[in-house]
Length: 341
Image (cartoon, rainbow, N blue to C red; front, side, top):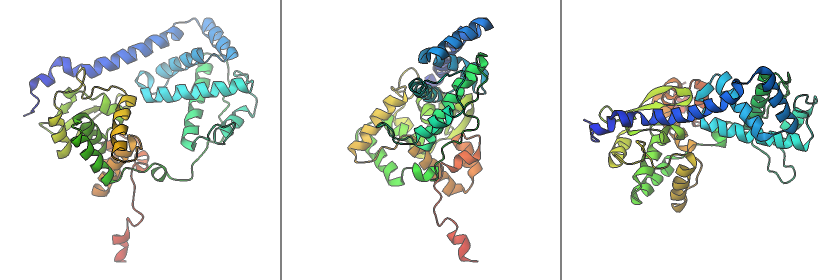
């Protein structure tokens, strides 16, 4: 029987996650309706004016309207994606202003020059990693998709521009935490009596949750009786994740705490990062972000199962190729198999 009692499964607690999402989606929908409700001539007029002035606020607002109504993710687009795209759109528009772009009729080499400039040390600005550069280009592409939707341009300026590539594989660039780091971090959280941080670490390192999935998790989604979590992932996808014995103990020690039915008092990535980073640095451990714990989980499960498909399902990856970037396969992985040849 669940040690937290039946009150944790009350309808009120069960609706907290849905209510939080509905409020965010409702805000995005209201924001989009400011554009979708316009007459086509007025939509074109406003978009043309914003493009002429390179008005970052208005153009971002237009981009959000497009992203939340006309893309596959739609209204379920993740806050992380929106934050990344907002940064990219702003940086692109700053460059376009500096270089006197005509956004609606860009010159043939404008886009290629900007993409190249992202990866070089220029004017004291540090070069961006290939993945970051690709993210910035994706944001600029989203802006142009929105401008085409508003029927103010037909331009696809990045269509034939080569994307920056990093020849070092993703797992080498950003490796998972080692087992000793995970164990030392858990021990530090226990010494500090931070049951919340202990649970957060284990949700990423044992359950393999994304940080957004962990932070929005409610007590109603935790079933300690059957050792299962019901996770609402990217794109609104729902999956069931098993609870390890260590995580089960941590959840019971932390039972009932948090805010508004959630497991934690911090609701955003920045708050969670502040507390966990501080804990790790006090222990003399490197802070490498939350994904290093998630990659530790992917690596651990692959070594136990040797099955990328099962690991992908556990991590919530739609494409198994994504999972390969989460698994650190040892160089001598096939040594035992080769020994008998």
